[in-house]
Length: 453
Image (cartoon, rainbow, N blue to C red):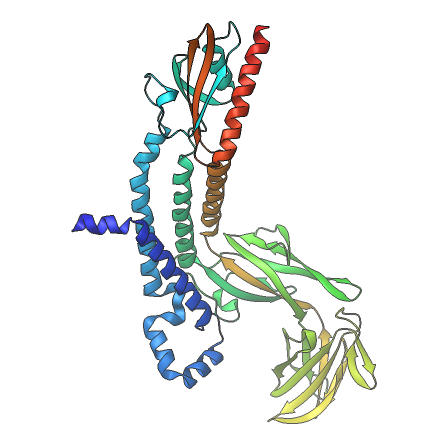
């Protein structure tokens, strides 16, 4: 019974079944909304409209299909099948790369060799010269002129094992990434320091099941948006780490430390707003990381008031309406709605070192640095995955470009002349291989003639 199960698990039929089932699961993942890929609001709305359907999907694990028990079971069976196939093939690979023992090789009786030809050697020419020429063309030769066996790219069957090994490396890398992955968003203003605290991320980051969050400490020393004709084209961020060393990150070059990548993704103003009373005394104030680029509106609170801010990097009035000429901070201005208990008290504009009066207070814009956001990733499995793909690519190139060719040859004498009889075969490209054999032996005999004349 166990033998029958193992036989089925390593069969081609079972491999095809698993591939079809995995493909169906991936297609289902594209059709069924996944919890990790849609917002909580949209997911809850879908669940509210189709409670029974969503309940069934959740029970089967199809709303988290890529990590569901069913998907993990299919992957486990797939790699069991792959391991059994490799275990079955290893002796065959070892047998194929082994050279045959010296014996009488007869091309006339060589079965499984579709290419057969006979070449007349020049007077005085012998098989030893032919064998020497074949060896110079990277053929490994066993035997002598009375009967020899030659093989080129003898080790190419190893590529089959390497290709299957690459799947296990990709699996190992994927599992390592799954359990060690950290993902979060970090927002820091110019001059602000990050000490590796998880609470500094917004929102709460995805913590690894194994390992720790990024162990990094640095201070943002400069933020320099790159502009071309008023259009953002880049963003350079200067950093100083805990050892006093300087680094630079931008949107195409993350800052890397502790197997982690800090990738610059966004920028915005981080104004220092201060609320003063009628006497000029500061009663509240703070740097605010506002998400107001691209026409967005953000809200902040100070001294019990709520301020709704709209930002114009290069402010001007267009037909009496505030607008911006570009995204470059040439003439930065905030339009502010001051609210209390949901009622607008005052509306107005504030520029750097300017003030907006409201009630018995003033809102003063004392400083206008930038803030920058980093997408932070940490996972240890990516190099293993890349290694797996590299080995797979190497195996494919090795297998199909440096494919195996075999020949059997013997020199015989007839009517006082010597002839070279050969039989040949190749793993792939039968017609190309036959042309190659014809060209090879024609050149060999020509070279033999030119050597004896």
